Image (cartoon, rainbow, N blue to C red; front, side, top):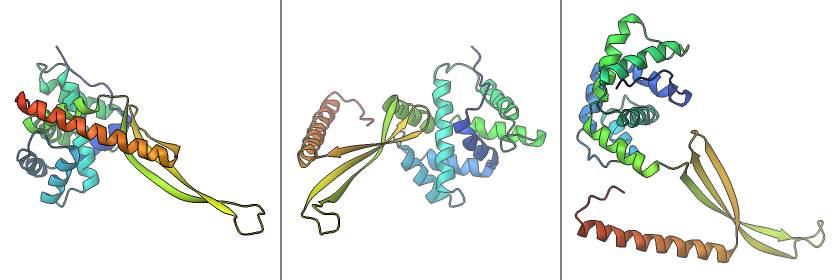
Length: 225
C-alpha cells in the first residue's frame, strides 16, 4: 500500500525548512547522538543531548526538527510496510507545491535532502520514542504548564482612605496544548480550601502511580511513563 503526503501542514513548515538545511555531516552527528540514547527518552532529553553534543544546532531548531520527525514516524506507523522511498519522494513534491521559498528545493538539493531524510527516518530510537510519545499524548488536550498566582485584594470603605481589610486570593493558571497545535490559557479562582483539595488529589495520584509502577515491575513490563 502506497503512503504519501500531499500537503505539508502549516505547523510543520518550520520543521521541514530546518530539515532542508541540514548537511549530511550534521545528520550523521545527530544520528550518532540519538542512537546512544535509550528509546524511552523524552523529547526534551533528546533535544538536550543533541544541543549539548552539537552546539551548532540551536535548541529551538533541534526541538522543531525532532517534533517534525516524530510526526513522520507516527504517520508511517499506519502503513509500516509501505516503501520509505515513496514517502520521502512525496514529501519533496509537497514541499515544492507549498509555494514557500523556505521549503522549495533546487534540483541539486533534492537528492541530498531525500538521502538525509531517509536516514533520519530509519532510526530505531526515534521510532520507538515517537511511539511512546504518541501513546502518552494521544489526547485532544494536553497539559503544558501551570502556575498559582497569590495576591492580596484590599477592601476599601472609602476609596480615598486606606483599606479597612483585605483578602488573600489565589488564581490557578493552566496552559494547555490543543490538538490543533495552539496553546490555550485557563484561569481559575481558588480558595485556601481549593488548594488543599488539589494537594490531596495530587498526593493520591502520586501514591497510585507508585502502586502501579510496582505492579509493572512484578509483571516484568517496561515502564514507559
